[in-house]
Amino acid sequence: MNQGYPITIYQEPDLHQSSLVLGWSEDAGDLGRKVTDYLNLKLKGQEFAEIEPDDFFPMGGVAIKDNIARFPESKFYACSEHELVICQSDSPGAEWYKFLSSVLDVAERHCLVKELYVIGAMVSFSAHTTPRQSLAVVNLPEMKEILSQYDLNRDMDYQTQPGERPTLNSFLLWLARERNIPGVSVWVPIPFYLAAMEDAQAEKKVLGFLNERLGLRIDFCDLDQEIRRQDEQLALARSRFPEIDDYINRLESNLLLSQEENGELIKKIEEFLGEGD
Amino acid sequence: MGIRLHQEPQLENPILVASWPGIGNIGIIAVDTLRGKLEAEEFGEIEPQEFFYPKRVLIRKGVLECLEFPSSKFYFKKIRGTDIIFFVGEEQPTEGGRMYAEGRKACRMAGLVLDVAEKFKCRRVYTSGAAVALIHHTTKPRVWAVPNAGSLISEIKAYQNTVLMSDIEGRGGHGNITGLNGLLLGVAKKRGFEAICLMGEIPVYLQGFPLSYPKASKSVLEVLSHSLKIEVNLDTLDELDQKVQQRIEEFYQQVPLEIRAQLDRLKRVAYAQPAEPGPITEEEEKRIVEDVEKFFKKRGEGG
Image (tube, rainbow over all chains, first blue to last red; front, side, top):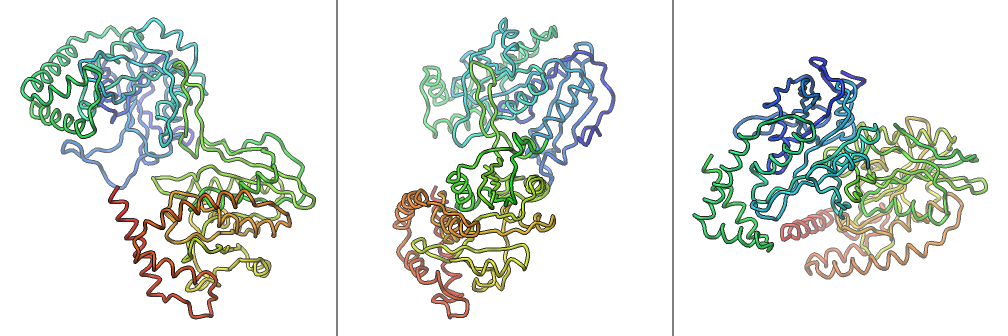
């Protein structure tokens, strides 16, 4: 435990000027989990800490996903060779300030983090064939300058709409700014009909940026293969089911589908890709 | 993390008037109207991060410029012999998807509000909220007053249009006040402050209605201003009430005739005394509530 925060440190990481990459486990397209899993696998991340869930998640039972009981997790992994910390976490349902402060406590006190990268997926009403364009939101103007050499849209204007609330990513960036930690939230659009599944293209988009920015030297040939496989599967779905093709054609022509048609497309794609698994 | 005071006004024998949003926003509209009419000056706030999720973000040209939280602010007004501290909370610090604050966070917030009351040596605390009652929306709402000490009862009995819990038929002097408007009363008792909660009546069929109920706020404010011995012009509340009443009437006309007939009978119950035989029996009262609940459930299912 650390100053009343529910942090368990298993082993002090050997990090001196690191960057923190954080992904939420239940993002659209499973993006946060996929990206952090991929980094952990490729860079041999070593788990060194976790935030105990009791204060932050409803403890009225367990959720079951893919036949398996799940328990909320917020884990930290160190990749010392790359001065990288990876945090993969479920999104807390309560005590957000305490939770996010705990994340930053681990980053600051145990990893001497100098920069923060938060992954965000946003549901888009574009076709999967539309090239993904990443958006970046920074918490300090100097970070915007630093990111100018990367393929990111850095000029987004946004304000919370009535009935909505800011994202956890914004809350985290804000708290990081209060600690003078430069941070960026990288947002990638996920086609709505892939939101409940996986989107290898979006994964590659985020990983490509991190690879370049953090000098990770990752070979993405396996991910490229996964993108090809997914593209082929979607092309097959289009050729077998004219209505899927029609819906996607219309999206490719920048036309919006009705709510019913959206639902129909999601259902058909999920059924088709689900059969292939 | 806690209280941030921008200035420390010199106050004489002040009282604290506090409120958070609740059913019909009755209490907060009353308190905030009084604060506005008296042009009370902001002097502090409770730091929000540990209590609230942010309510608004502003991103300009890719830079996170501003993250706003619900506010919890203190104001003061110096009035000869009756200095007042106002506390206005924009939201209740709820947990786990509940509608009203409860538990550790709520107690902590109540404690912080009373820390300010203690610092400025407040002699009394008022809170305000809603009382769900079997009344009709065309009748003048009464004010249910709940003190945290027996010594305050005689004073309350002298208030106009005000009843104690023991005056409410079938209550036997018992009841609950949900959320921080009630909790503050209890925490105040524990810390030795005398406190009174003033609750304006709202018709039972409007408790889930997504509108404020200024008619009851006005009743509360009449009692509060009398108790504080200050005069306030309540025209703005009347104007607001007229607009809301128009919306309520529009809704009322959509209520099925047989339910409306039951609800119309409520026009006669507002001022029934406990000793009198009520114009509506207990069984009828139960039926009205059930019918109204059924009606709202049906509307909800219908989208």
